[in-house]
Length: 560
Image (cartoon, rainbow, N blue to C red; front, side):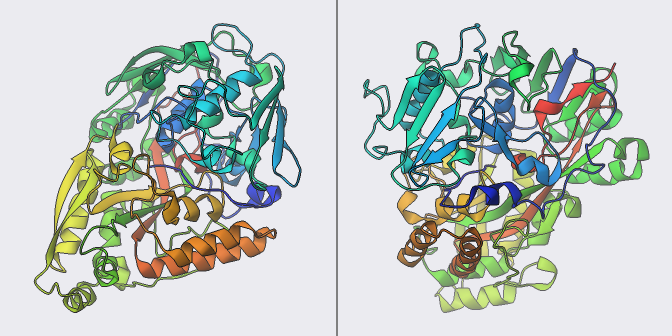
């Protein structure tokens, strides 16, 4: 699942301190020991990669991989726990210099940064990389450039407009200036997203760039077989002297895709042969929790990372009878959140969610408008609401899930819990490589979606607006899978956007989250943690809050 959202006017200091409530990796820095440069790190993934093109990369798992291949103006710190939420310079010398009341932002590139062919990375490469995110052919990325850059709402991208976007200026090779149509105090955080990675125009292959983005990071693509394997090899023109985030320790990183998750767990519990040099990409499955926790030698290789993610069930409010609030509230009462958590591994997978904003985000307040004993659902209340809405005999809905073992088990959990209230659920399984592209297409999305959200940087400003502002619903690349559009909520988002006091804005977002919850466009069920197994030779392993508690791949190494 992904991080996506719409940042608003917030103080820069707020961005850096708001993760104080997040948990870190067990054992502080995770797996210890001295790492050596060299070797081949193996990453065993039960997922495919949705997108590698930085213009389209807006899913946390793919962003974790993308950070190995390309750099951005700023990025997340490479650290466990709350420190990982700090935004630090990457290609730029600092996190940006605002002027004109935060309507203009200037960045200076570090000296000596290069692409994989040795050519210098220039401000024009970043300008072009941002401009191509406006192209209709590349719709899946975050909307910040389109929302905030002056003239962005009418610009059609470089394939149709060869003159470029005038609000991105490049006065020299190392200076880039962004002119915004409003004050945005956290723009220095927004430029940490892949959409602000450099792309040389002569290497752009349009939609085919997805399979071979040009490297500005420590690794370049050696070979890529979608749904099977991505092999990354060292970019010899990457200089650690210019990069304080990525360690670039292994010579090669091999990511095996679409593996059976049970097989991944078994291989890493045994950690024999090359699997001693391997890590899992996804958390351990429910069936593996008991054996892992019962074996001290394996348990010490389990790295648990917290996140700022909320998982929820999206309800398509444009589909009948889901346009009736009573039907949506019935689903909220009926959902067995504890069973969904069990499908994800039990308590080790996180805390049952009752609000949109996780407790680690500022503005979050305790709330539970649809309570049930133990979070197991209340079928009686659900049936009563359905009867009021004229559906005493029940109804039939279709649920979109990823076509993975985890997606199937979560789908079956939803199916079983809603059946107790008389709601029949048909499961529509979608390939993990196309899941968000499919449910983000309003013509293809069904009634319900196994869903969730990780803020792009810590704060409700990168969560509630993008997911629940009905004015941002788009035919493709849509993030509002509930298709929720409330004039009252939209107006309140605009009012909060204009607030200068970050504490007041956080409080206002907390109140707005409570208001949205009562309309039940989504049903939160889990605030995530991720428990990930590593091989015995792996060093530098910790869960990163920006990647839903998964391992921060840029810090991993191997001990000899």
